[in-house]
Length: 151
Ligand SMILES: Cc1cc2nc3c(=O)[nH]c(=O)nc-3n(C[C@H](O)[C@H](O)[C@H](O)COP(=O)(O)O)c2cc1C
Image (cartoon, rainbow, N blue to C red; front, side, top):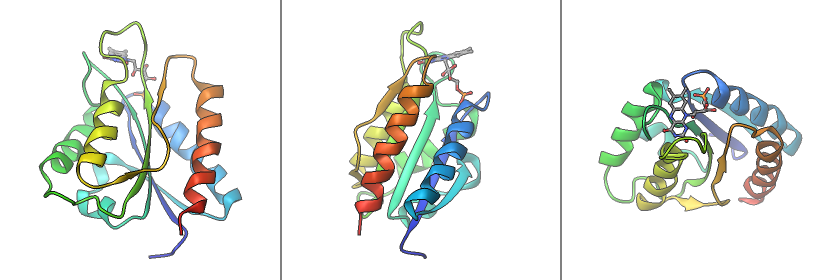
């Protein structure tokens, strides 16, 4: 594994989270980080636990539910052993809509399960409403600065 690796995983139903992950990966190159964007459907908890830098970008669907492509991975991480995420420095960007009762619930769940399993929060979670472009961009820049500082 390269020491500048950054894993970006997205949970999405209509592509917003994927687009943000791609944008963040593009920006990461300016920080001399080596980004890899993955659909949550295509990775395992073991893949996540091997990374030192992790950005999770996930929307919420239904009534506070994980997107379809995120549910299995979320369940698998929840069921993984204690300390499975030790050494993982993570930050979560949650997409949602304040018109819904369970605003950004999936992102909140990711933020708390990664910490519960031993991961270290590198930046505070950002909960985004529908008009998220500027906030998300600012958060991504700030998060990349923090990720870059991780030795
Ligand atoms: C049918 C439906 C259900 C949704 N449920 C929620 C919800 O429970 N909580 C929330 O914060 N946002 C909810 N949203 C808003 C989405 O999370 C938001 O539009 C997000 O930007 C979608 O991102 P994606 O394209 O990456 O899936 C819902 C949207 C739709 C259309």
